[in-house]
Length: 295
Image (cartoon, rainbow, N blue to C red):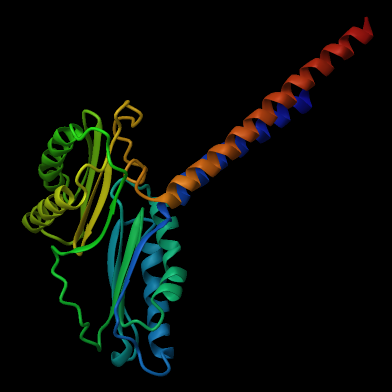
């Protein structure tokens, strides 16, 4: 039976690691990129070095802070300023893991752009090249990106959603820029940029709510991203969303990539669990057979 116990321990650890991978992979999924149309002409070696130096300063900070700004670059003509922000409900480890994926994504998605924003489900990164005036007339309250989920068969849930929005609008100010909570069957979340003052944060979230009500009419889930804040909501008609399920509740039914990741990991977990039970059962039968042979 010693071998059976060892096998059970190994399989249980495997299940634990796979569940943690599922959670982390959701945080690190790309939501959108917003790269400036203004690009660097010719060689961008100095810019690349400055951006690399910026990440070297930002990434270590993500293990102890949810928001951090910095400027890097010895050459004033190639200096780069930027910041990262993690969702308020992430652990320090999840924040670090999320931010640690951003350097490669930034290089591949916004190569040579003088400014860019990479938004993942768990964190985002923004940078701009100091020498350039970025041609961006986007207001901090203008819509940058939206994701609306499938339409509900019955729009009566929107009453619950609006009540959740009301709680979120006051809660995000009380929560110093972050809110995650439930109203009946609706989970809502909001976050403002880390250095946004309370009144501006409240105004930004209120604008996002109005956009959600106009753009995601009848949708059971939605994500609204403005320049300085974002909101999300999810409706769980059968109580399938646990209270405070902020981990990934805003991702459900709003991005096919997240749904597929969850399904794949669920299949793997189910397969491993079935193999574990089968192996333990066979080992039990074998041990019983050995006892019978002794007698």
